[in-house]
Length: 415
Image 1 (tube, rainbow, N blue to C red):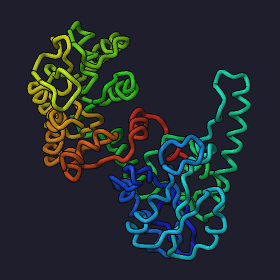
Image 2 (cartoon, rainbow, N blue to C red):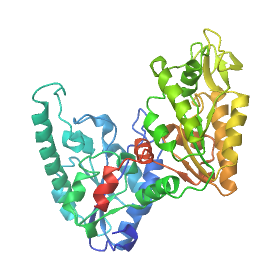
Image 3 (tube, rainbow, N blue to C red):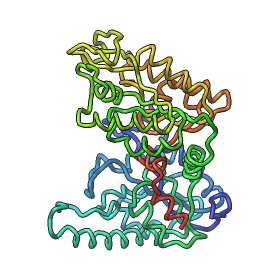
Image 4 (cartoon, rainbow, N blue to C red):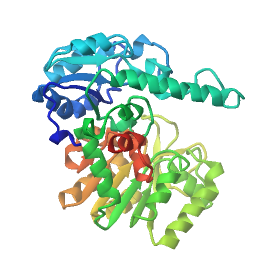
């Protein structure tokens, strides 16, 4: 069943969204992107004449009530975005009466799902090495099913529109779907777009295909790098990873971030790229700084020869040109991870060069997918989010999908 084909008139719909939005010290939302992303789905249900039960997590309360992570803080912002009053259920597992009382066009927001350990389904307060762990895990899985059954009992229809948590088999993202038949569970508009964007990258590739992987550690990206190696024409590795590769090739990287225990892995990636005919593009120069600070002294130097006491914080001018040349001729582009410490304004140049090249290629007909928190922050910071084909809301979910893994939150709905 698709959301477009379903008429929600007279139905109660429980929708899993990702309203894990950043809050300031006063509990005010600093970025409402995730709320805005869910609006098409939520508004469709209300426009059809359905009633709406919204559920989400916020932060990592680890199965305990934490007022700083209460969704009550965002109730008014959600109401303003929807243009409708929003009721609040202080306990997500004891909301049956409020759900039953909902009339068509009315909205109920449930309290943070992760105030219950059953949401994540992990045993609490017991170590994995403990002999009793397996029994505790089984007991928690049974409790998770009951928790999911309770959530499901509030509604006639289940909609999953939370791509950011689709890679987790949590009660609200996957298990709850077991309590609805195929005609009464579906993906929301946001999820549909995310799945389609991933399919464009993995199944409908227009060549040349260039993937840009940034970030500080090779180890956290190895799965996706290996999966992409069979698909891409150009693979740009940038950010902190640069210095692990430079060190592996015998360079001096000064104080730069470097995984010294992953040097063999870096060399192996280079070898595999050569064997598969992939153009591996690595940084050749960098903007080095004498401190991890926006106001540090800087110099341009080879990534193979960074002076002691200095660290590479951004891609250098030669590297930016190399990256742009690879990107601008591409027809499919994936960007995950910045080229430098873009949070510091003086070290945004490398990431900006990547963004500008992607915008240029997109204008010439390329499909460009930007995903992962820092890359999304980059395109927002540079004001170009509307000039790329698709900006993904999912960090870990996007990476796992591109690694070729099945996402439980998608599979449970499509089962």
